[in-house]
Image: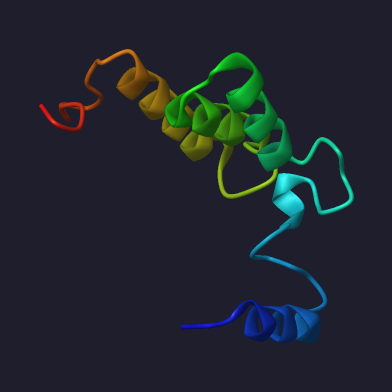
Length: 94
């Protein structure tokens, strides 16, 4: 297992922190970095993990991978939150 020091050394070698603050999340110095926003909303508004994840997928859909794939992931998280199924998959625990 890598220690945080090992990860820092690896990240310093490539010039970017792709573990803790990747560019597609907004970056370390951005006060609106997606993970910071969803953590705050989760606490302030009582949003569940599924809803926070959906917001993250929507917020970064134009910055990482394919837009369609990230929006499909957001839909999947929202459907899990409301207890539905998605593409025939039952909600966890059913």
